Length: 163
Image 1 (cartoon, rainbow, N blue to C red):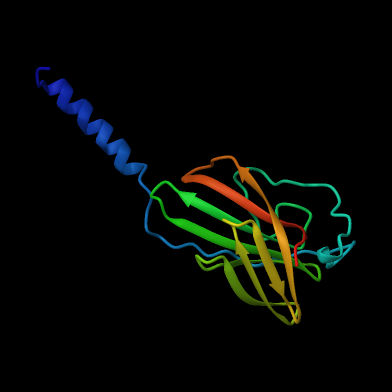
Image 2 (image 1 turned 120 degrees about the vertical axis):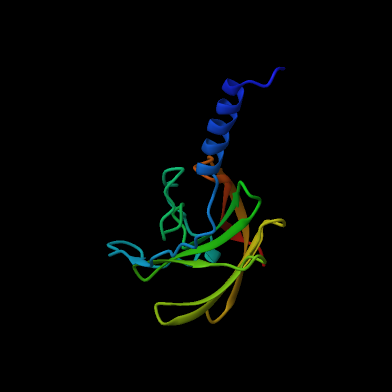
């Protein structure tokens, strides 16, 4: 292949496009939002109650509320640069909150005036919630389609009592 001015210009245009599409190191903040509940405020899923119908948000929009009709879920996002983001989202007493979890899948937080700890072991498909008494759960997993710079998004939610 012979080097020409046209080839050089094409290479410059391609590199400019690649640089423009590269991710930045900017941090982002997730704002806590609240909702007004007209139905069940907090369900004890350890008792095997009916979970109701599944409702899934758009592939690209992940708000503060859990994706499925459950009190909490765990979201794992894998980005194109091979970094991970872990988020636990809770719907308690009419409020949805989203908190960053550690890479071990745990988050300590206060919701509705109650200290809580939620941990999810995504590899083994189990988790627990402690808000004054520890309850263990088997976790179901679903993948959400790729969107933007996220290569993969997985959602884990409680599917039944395990201990």
